[in-house]
Structures are given as C-alpha cells and as structure tokens.
Length: 148
Image (cartoon, rainbow, N blue to C red; front, side, top):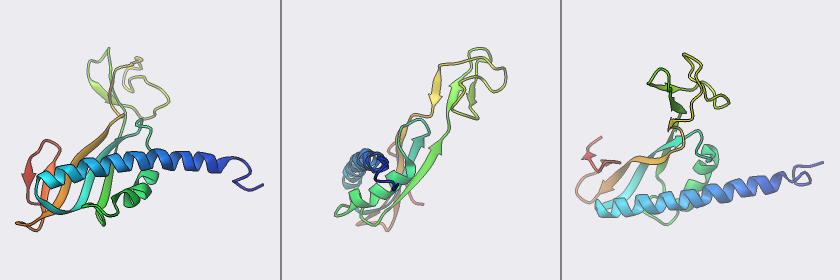
C-alpha cells in the first residue's frame, strides 16, 4: 500500500499549505521593512521559531524559496533558530528550559508550571540587505541597523 493510499498525502499537502501561508506572510513583512530601509535586495532573514509554534521548520524552509520568488527576497537565505520551551517555575521563581515538551515541570524541583515564557514564537530577529549606498546592512528586530 503506497503513501497516497494511506492518506499521507493529505497530511503533507496540509502541512505545506500551512507553512506556505506563513512563508508568504514572512516574505511580505520582510519586504516591507527592507523597502523602508532602502534595500535593493535582501540577502538573509534571521527567524526565531519556537518548538511549540506549530510550524515545521523544514517545510517552512522549502516554502520560503517559493514565496520569495519575484520579490526583494528572491535568492535570500532563511536562517531558522529553534527556540526551546522555557517555563517560569512558580516554586524556584526563575525561568527554566524544559528538556522535553512532554512534561511541563521544573527540571530542578519538579513543580508543575503553566507559565510559558518561550517556545511559541515566530519572530523575525533581523534581516541582512544590500542597499543602494552600502553593500550589506543588518537590520535587527528592534530597528537597529549595523554593518555585519
């Protein structure tokens, strides 16, 4: 029995449609920021992606190239940094990175916690552009611009 017969294709298509939609939104947001900065083209996009974001990183990378075609981002690289789950331990009073997403307990004291501090983000951390004036600039999420 092939994958198509088992219904796997529907899951693959559903995942790609979801990530393609996210990739299109990402490209649109970066293109707008790059245009405001006077970019000739975008060379790299830095993205923080939480492990609980519901986004498959490999599928997003695949869809990114499709979404970027014909834009300032065509040919650019999408660099994804996976962000681990971090909870605030109510007993210890400090943020703790979870070793697994299966158990939302402080890895130090074992206290359960529902206070998620990190892990669901889809955040543009910065973009690298080529502008008319300078060969390459880095624009950070906070708007700060620098040379790499």
